Amino acid sequence: MLEALEGVIASRKADPSARSYTTKLLASGPPGAGAKVTEEAAELVRAACEETADRVVAEAADLVYHALVLLACRDLTLARVEDELARRFGVSGFDEKAARSAVGGGGSS
Image (cartoon, rainbow, N blue to C red; front, side, top):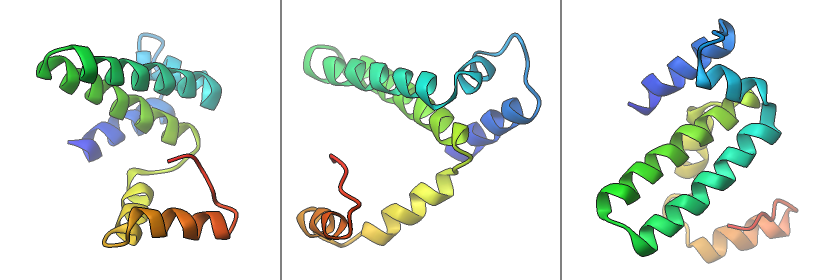
């Protein structure tokens, strides 16, 4: 499903449609799409703390969609994210974060 969604996002980027929300997000670039990722992340956390499981799932889906649009704004793919996750798999989160910090790749995760 994620690959299919990524394909739709790529098609909107290649062939914009004035009636497409995805096209509008892509046109807003990383700042606009990033603001939506931030908004959706907050909504997911709020739902996880206060709402039903169905609402949590719906907000998680919104976050994933907006993250894929943000990646597309930078011409990055889900495959790149999967490769990074595979690289980290089986490594302690503390060790992985320390390794990123040691090479200047910090981040706040």
